[in-house]
Image (tube, rainbow, N blue to C red):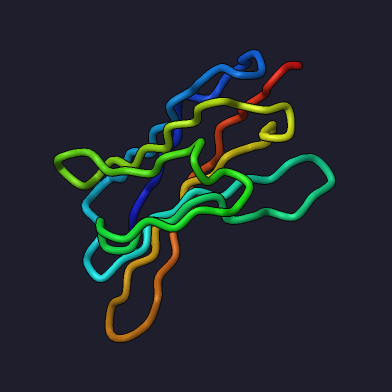
Length: 119
C-alpha cells in the first residue's frame, strides 16, 4: 500500500502561482505513472498532468505552458507547479500513483487539496 498526501493548495489571485506537493509513504515502483487530476464543482475529475516513470511528461491542453509536473530527488514526492493561474483552474487537485506489480496496475489516490483562483 502507498499513502499519498497532498499539500500546497490555497487561495490565489488570477495570474498568480502555487506549488502543489504530493508526498508518498514509499517510492512507487517502476514502471509507474504519477499524475495530477482535478475536479471542479459539478464536473468530472480530469487528468491535468502525468509523469511516466519519472521521464516523459504529458499535460492537458488547458494547462500546457502554465503547469509543470516533476519529482523530487528521492522520487517519493511529486510536484505540480501552477503558474499564470486562471479562475477556471479552481478545483480540488488530487495526486494519483499507479504502479505495476505482477502485471497488474495498482492505483493510489491522495485526499486532495483545494485550489481557488479569484478573478
